Length: 285
Image (cartoon, rainbow, N blue to C red; front, side, top):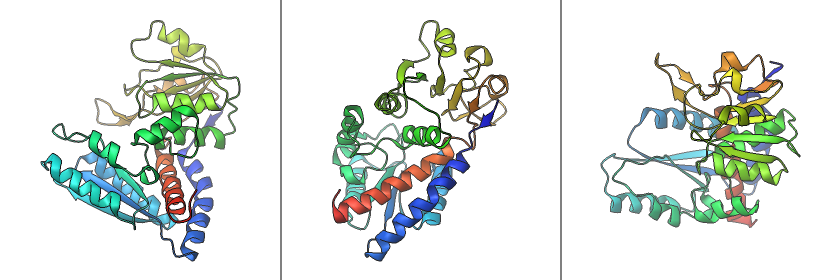
C-alpha cells in the first residue's frame, strides 16, 4: 500500500473554504441552518447526529433537531416534517433513514423543497444527478467519494471503475457522478457472475454492498485504488467496512479505511449542501 486515504485529511482541506462561505453569508445577514429530523433513537442515528452537529458547529452552521417518537403516526410525521420544510430559517434538511416500518417516506420525498434537500431525497434532485445537472444535490456519501478521489488526485478520465452496490443511496448515483467525469463504469452486486474477476480488472474499486469484508485480497488487482464505503459491525462488535483491509492493503496503491474514511467526509459534504441551500434560497442560484 502506498497511500492511506484518510477522511479527516479531506474534511480538513474542505473546512477552510466552507468557513469562508459561511462567514460571507453571515455578513449579509444569512445564517445557514441544518434541520435534522430523527424518528426514535437508533444508536447509529444518534452517533451520526453527534458527528454532524459537531462538524456543522465547527464551520459555523446552526443545527436544529426535530426528535419524533418511534411510534408516531404517519399523519403526525408528515405534519412535523412539513413544519421543518416550511421553516424559512432552515436551509437544509437531513432525515434519518430508514424510518420505522409503519412509516411511508414517499410523501415527504415528494414534499421536501429541492433546495433544502441536503441528502438527495427529492425526485427532482435524483433526476438531476442522473441527467448530469449539477444545479441540484447528489447524495452526501457518493459526493464524499468524489471529494476523496479529487483530494488524492486520482484521475478518473478513461479509467476502469467497478462499483459494488446498486442502491439509490450510493451505487447508482455514484456511477452517474463517475460517468460524468469520463470514467468507464461497471456496476456489480452480490449476484454478479464472476464478481472477483470483474473486480480484479478494475483500476478503481468502490465497495458499497453492505456486506462485511466481502472484498478480499484476491479480488483486487495490483496497484488498484480501493474506496470502502461500507459500514458494518463484525462478530466481535467492531466497526468494519466491505473490504478486508488487511488482505487488500498490500495490493492497493490507495485505500480508504473504515472507520475514519469516506464516512468522515460525508458531514462536510452535508455542510457544503446546507451552505448552497442558504445562498440559493436567499440570493438565487
